Length: 291
Length: 273
Image 1 (cartoon, chains in turn purple, blue):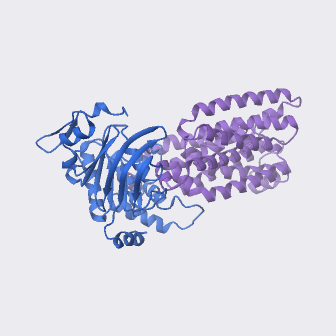
Image 2 (cartoon, helix red, strand yellow):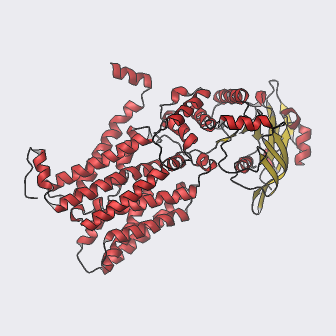
Image 3 (cartoon, chains in turn brown, orange):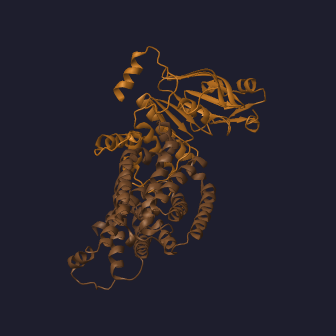
């Protein structure tokens, strides 16, 4: 960007939002950060970050295929991640035994994506933006699709929140209480698939962790109540996305770099400074506060 | 919950919590054990013992409605078992909680109260109160705001017991709650479970590897090994004659001066059916 950053934040924001691509970026970025923060909490709680990672790679093949046939990548992402998520649940019904199955599907899908990219005779920037995100190039149709997907995710999460939480924390008791683990597993994977599909626009296939896992991992270290952790996770991913977009408006570097860096620094801070407080006995912590 | 269940118990003349007749359990193509007949009454503490892989957890899966009997009949509260029965409190052997699970104890117990309900409820007051009452009942109220990851094995078992008690059940199914505890902690937990059983008149079935910490409190014992099931009072079941006759191999039940029991001769024969 050519214009400079001034000390007047309001003026800066006004200037920024004169551009439609920045409006779109903020709209889509906000929606994505919101759902990624929520779905991410369950990804971390269920130790399914590898599955989320794999789903984004499966989405790569879908996005590349969509580009090849000339439609918006998000349609390919939605189709491939949904089918892939269901497939992974069917292949291994219990979450803990899925590494090999997921890895097998992941590798094949990446290979397929490479084929599609090589068949596509257009610009190589398409592949680049799928892999690393290109939120500044988002269209108003993409924003609309993102909004619909986000709404679907929010409604679904509100409906399954407690059963999914219960099943994630204490599978056997939840099953004995009448919940169907297989059905909840599929619902969870579809949520991740949907969230991944729209998050790819912001951070790309390869950097999906920065929005789907890291903010939730930070939140889970800080908050013991699931509800608090979800809110915190959303705040972190929102802050990272907004700050990333803001900085990228003035600096000639990719948005996804700034987002990943912000959440990584936060993670390091929490990882190394928070545990000392947590591991103390409550009595000691109390003395710390009163001292 | 409390009122309906207590009415159901008091209105029948001879209430039976569990009754099994000539029960055969297993999976298609594989029978785990056969010919089991037993009944448990309200307020009984029952130990289920036997070698690994003998089918102790299978009995729980039958009672929870997660598995169907191959033949014979099993009834719980005079009905065939069905999934999601709130009158059953269950503590499984397997838990996904580890050092990374930074979730407060009260939340887990709270989920056992309302975690099976769909939809969004803004007020969780009643559930959190019930969860706190359950934690108090097992002397773990102080752990309510603490993280599950911060607790020791014995403390966690108390939280799991509270989780099972929160729906105010009439029967508790406890799968190896003592397995990861040293003998002192095991005895503490058994005393706690016994206190819950007596004060609430709840029936408790407890799968255990070692019967000795339980012996002072037991009403009945279920001994599962070699595809067969022996049940009755501990002093009747745990005798050399009874077990030798049932299993067709020489079994010796040895008692030491403090009343501890050791069963010899059956452990190395398990799993061949």
